[in-house]
Length: 200
Image (cartoon, rainbow, N blue to C red; front, side, top):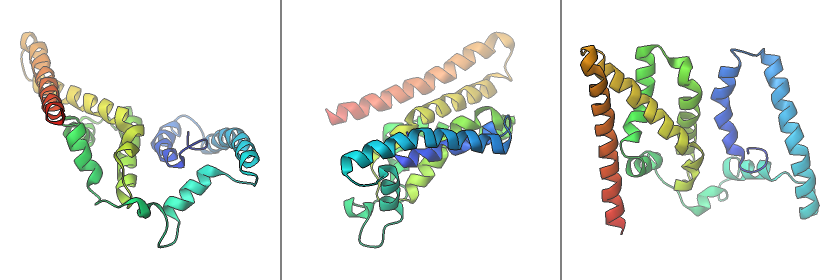
């Protein structure tokens, strides 16, 4: 996706690469990655250059325009927002999923499960941080990581419900787990419904 279309999604591969390094030698990982990039990039360059009538690589042009352009150009022409724009947007659209997503790193540290879901949490956190540093912001830019944010929130809720239920007797632990997760899901549905009602 980063080579064919939007180059910034390549940031999402960095946490996954750190996980793969635990199973593959560094040089093997780099070699396989470069082979994959070249195999996809060469047809993209050939096809786009044929249609544009000159040698070009649009993903590189996109990156240079949005990040490396001089003052007076670049994505800032389309408007700028404060660094907290995406957090505010997630607070509206994801409601309870946002605090759960933000709580997951602390839960992982406490439960010593960092490696287990690092490949899920890492890309989403890195993406939101990267986008927050860019002057031009749009809600649609969050699309690549919304599923990961939802999954991270679900994992955080699971861990929190287990911690909530674990001190209880065995016969009460499962009902307590269901009660906590069900309550959070119900609150999320109510918040989403109230926002939809306001829009309508």
